[in-house]
Length: 223
Ligand SMILES: [Ca+2]
Image 1 (cartoon, protein in one colour):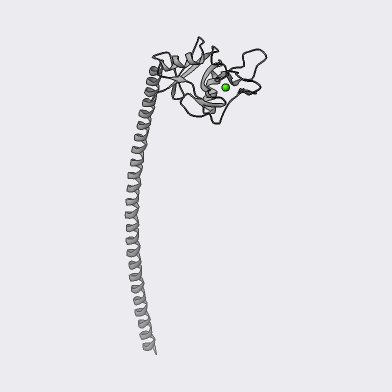
Image 2 (cartoon, rainbow, N blue to C red):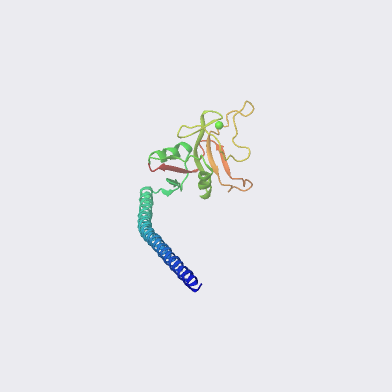
């Protein structure tokens, strides 16, 4: 009986050793697998960090180049504006809104005014936008415009040969056309009126006899 128990005990101890050995093997295997995975992840992380650093460096270089380019562009724009102003101011014109302008200090008829402009490689001012109208208004001075219906009564044309289209900035009641009841009004040239005469405060365009003498405004393209 005792012998049988001893044999059974020895058998159990041997089984326990096997189980312990298998557990140890399993544990070692798991540790090796985890170590390999960790090493792989660490390696990939290092590669990613390197790429991020490289991209950040490139982004910094681009930012720096962009700032240098913007500085150069600003400098060139300033130089260009300066040259445009000097080019305009050579014969008393003023630079603004991409064009050279001149506002007279004396008065002439519409044709004389236009000739004065043309003698200086310019022409009477043309208004085809609210911005241009606002520019003319900003000088607060009545001036001849480059608009006339001398060729065909009632058909207004700009001095560049283009027809009058919208927007227009006529004063109320303007323009006045020749009719059978009111022939020969002779109002074929257009001026900007600044509302300076007592009793007539409304600013805007008026047609007037071309022989009237008014201030005038020339413009000249820089191109
Ligand atoms: Ca007319």
